[in-house]
Length: 291
Image (cartoon, rainbow, N blue to C red):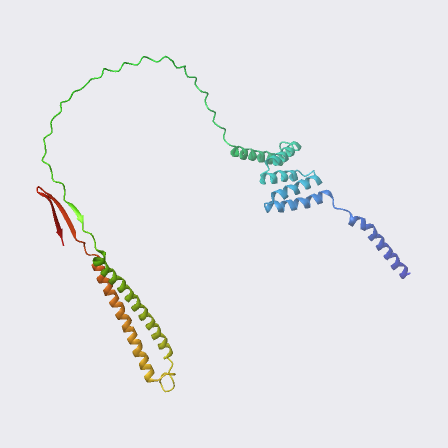
């Protein structure tokens, strides 16, 4: 008997479950689905995704057209997105469905006023209208007679005789004496050229000596355990130092001598050349010179 009761109980539970399956598998009611879509639209609106919010509000209103707030959400989202034409259509459609005392009717009217204000402020100012041109009276083509020119008056002036002046002797003509290049400029140019060559030679000898001295100083910097230079002896080191000093002295002497020769040649070139003057006199021309 107990076994029969258990079997009957299981059959009843299975029947109840089979009857509940169509109920569980049935789609949600339109109001519930529209509410879920409207919640998504609100999230998009809060994140300033106004185009997507308008599409979701429009979808929710198609599912459940009994909710005027969905159509108002369409208009507000389009207004925020800058699509004033679509927003105006949504608000006017909602106002046509509601009485004038409904809160959404009043909100829609306020939103339309805001759209009108924005459009008026964004509209360009009207262009100024130019005044019509004023007709000018026709000018007379007859010119008045021109007055005759006055008769010419001839003015005769007396010519005054200018006082005669004594002739002034012309300024002396200065003749440049011919320059003798072989005697006057050959020696100075030779001194300048030779002095420059000596200076360059002395500079080259001095620089090469300093380079050799620096290399020898690096090589002689290594000392052995006994405190002496490694790789050389006293005689070799003394001869090397003497040779370097001699070369440096020769280079300095060549440079100083070259500068002296070049300076002397330059001084000779800067001297003023001799001049010859030719002066007119009552007896003739007088040739004078300055040496």
